[in-house]
Image (cartoon, rainbow, N blue to C red; front, side, top):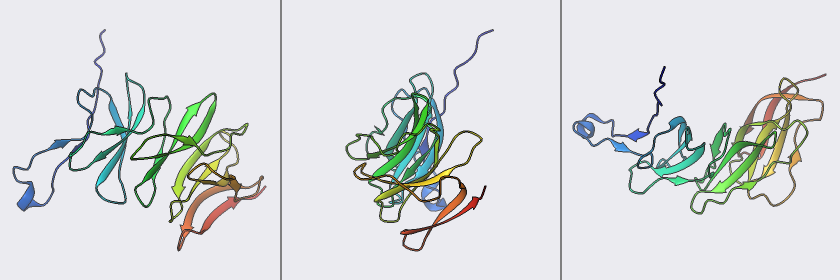
Length: 193
């Protein structure tokens, strides 16, 4: 039995009736792309799309202008197990998680000159998730902990320079969290042991 390789592409088109009737549908995925688009988001600047792909050519995180005026840029390089991403409020960087050497770590890259920098501190548990930037874009918040175990809330400098700071206690099981007001405080709930 032969299996067909399925792929999906990413497109943009105007939705206003006066504009979209007969409007051109613009493909944002790279030319010749034959992989799957798994996750998409519009950057805060409303001018760029970020998308996560997987397939025969590996996994990748891409950045493209929504009007199709430039080719998409591969932000992450090709990797395995890219699972989530977050765009900084200034639309100048993207944080993402990548699985390597048994750990899921947090990386941040500028969008204009992609050069990913690991910002999480590796730990034995090695599962980082739920990425968020502070409102000023200077820090990335994330939860980290073992599969099926307690998650601790962390704050890392988005440029990778400086300490990664724990926000919740070592025995806390941090659940959902939200940035408060100007993004310099965080509200979170935690199951206590």
